[in-house]
Image 1 (cartoon, rainbow, N blue to C red):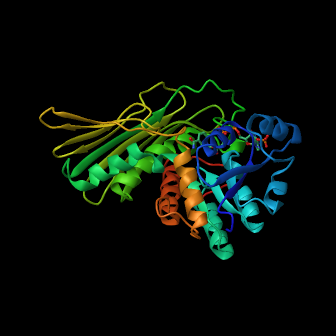
Image 2 (image 1 turned 180 degrees about the horizontal axis):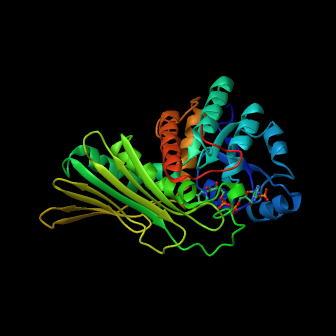
Length: 331
Ligand SMILES: NC(=O)c1ccc[n+]([C@@H]2O[C@H](COP(=O)([O-])OP(=O)(O)OC[C@H]3O[C@@H](n4cnc5c(N)ncnc54)[C@H](OP(=O)(O)O)[C@@H]3O)[C@@H](O)[C@H]2O)c1
């Protein structure tokens, strides 16, 4: 790219579209160039806040704009596959919100399309790029807390949203697992790898999606992971990685920019604090910009293989719990 600037187009004008637009202000070699909404008025209102040069009343127009280099898919889960394929077909690199697709078959097709078109594609799992999460992995891998026997992780809050909101709406592939349970599942895969055994149970609520989901993983070396997500419980959102010599604690709202500590078996506490820049979403955006400018088609940090392991694990949990979505069935 001659001018070394990556021009972004955003699909959707909701909460995450705004959050990433804010983050892009702190990312080098970046311009927020276009936004698309189902309604032109919404795109215009979005643009007023962020001074976006091009506004469109459809997603396809963003993808067709020859000035756009990369598209950020910030629509509800059920559209990720469709929006990503459409953007790739128009020759755009893509950063797609989590969950990448709703099932393994969607994710495989998205990856195959990106490979066919030789374009960059990445799942927007922002926590993977945060210094606190990367440090926790480094400590766990270093042997400092000994062999890891147990990982506990949660993401739960009481959602005050209506049954029509994407949290609860079956048509939008709602439910706690794909929206927030994906984070504890991510952490377990990131720290311990792919489990050999998966057990799970869900509370399927009135709108026929999982309001809570409880998961247990077993690893080849006998380590266990105990994970849950919920829209019906205001629980602490913490993670702990327990080893033979001590534990790593990822403090409340662990998946966000925050601090961690190591607590040794003798009670000694070693706090590890971080200086963050931006709102935290700039770290994943920075990875996208650097990858595109250097001609890469996938991220070494959030690779295709990792996203496939993640969705295959989510599929296995869905099978265990009977979490079913119309038009997005499991194989
Ligand atoms: N990485 C994170 O930390 C994080 C946090 C929250 C959510 N997410 C992910 O980001 C995605 C969007 O979440 P969000 O919280 O930004 O949702 P949101 O506030 O509801 O925004 C979604 C946007 O998608 C568009 N859309 C298209 N079809 C829609 C439909 N049938 N119903 C509702 N909206 C529709 C709308 O934009 P237009 O009307 O302008 O087209 C809407 O503003 C989800 O997949 C979620 O998993 C990620």
